[in-house]
Image (cartoon, rainbow, N blue to C red):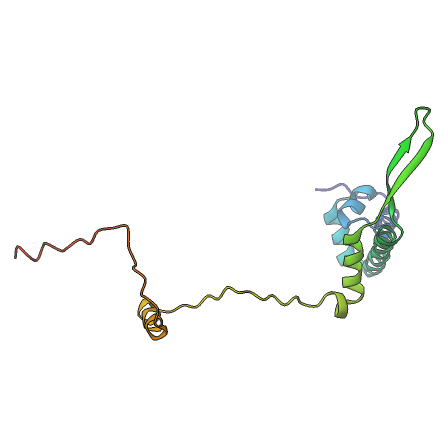
Length: 161
C-alpha cells in the first residue's frame, strides 16, 4: 500500500506544472514524487484537478508545437566548430523537413493530408484453371504446360480385387 502524501495540493500543483511544460503524465508523476496510478486516481476523484490536468496538457502540447515550428522554420544548431583556443568559429544550422511536413499535414489537412491514390499494374484475379484455359484459347494463345514435382500414383488396391 502506498504511503500517504504529506501535502497533496503541492504535489498536484507540481504535477500540473510538469504537464504544462510538455511532460507525459508518467514523467510528471515521477517529477512530482508520486506514482502515475495515484495521479490518475486523483484525476478521477477531483474535478478541479482533472480540469487543471486537461488545461496543462493543452498548454504543453502548444509548447511542443511551438518548438516543432521553430525547428522546422527557424532551424536549430546542429554542429559548432571551435578553433584550437576554444573560440567558436562557426556553426551549422539544420532545419527539420519532417517536422515541417507534419505541421502542414496537421494545420492544413485538406491540402497536405489528402489520401494518396495508388495505381498498380498488378491485378490479382482468381479464376479456376478451366476458366484460365478457356480464356487463353479464346485469345488464341498456347496453353501452358503445368508440371508438378510429383509422379502420378495409381491406386493398385482395386486391381487385385
